[in-house]
Image (cartoon, rainbow over all chains, first blue to last red):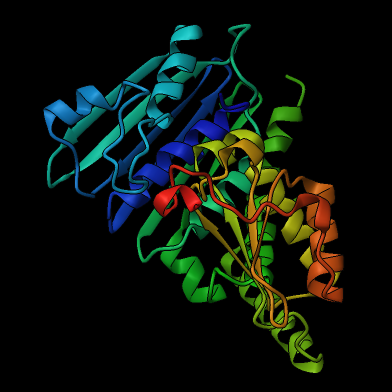
Length: 190
Length: 133
């Protein structure tokens, strides 16, 4: 099972990348009550039958690993969301793409911790592939609100090859500075 | 801390570029591949990715390639990391954490010495052909 909310996001985004999508949008909205994530891709999508099957941990399409009989990403997420009375929806159209949306109530005692947003976003953006990704992140608290947007193609154009450690460290510095602005709001007393 | 703008990021890139040009390119052609499947993520692969980036930064190894892949078939020893380094055999390390990542950079990448306690180079039987026999 995943330890943090960010781990669930990594897993779902990786599904979107592996769906052959050319565009993936990731929306991550946080307020004092909940964190809601929506991952939309324009990849190969799933038939109604496959959509039902992917909620079963003992189902996988067998394409990535022949002989494997488990697919845990979505079942893990559903289990964690159910445990905290959150929400989960999966919408997909074969040949058009998939949207996975979920919400965790942050005040629930069993809600996993947020995790490391910076390393999650860096790893999502740097996963190999020619896809574009747009990440929208927002925080809305009584103490203030802020947010930022990351566009993969803009960052690659600016920094170059995301496979190099030096480039990834610059990306990390950039994402860190965006997230630090949200942390400042989080640390303000109201 | 003020948010960095894209223009500031561009300036950072330019300053890094000129620094790199002054140095010999250490670690060139070395590839670090981190298993980022569900099993890897659950076991802390992102902490490992972070640790590698920090170590590369600390040792100014800008040209080491760091990529991610899915499950490598060694779920029981996640997080797993494959290291391809010139003059060294390809190695898959298992049970990697931040301390092991530091050892991989300092010993394997920089000194050409394997981190023996963490070498797991056989994928699990359900992944490789004929169960690896």
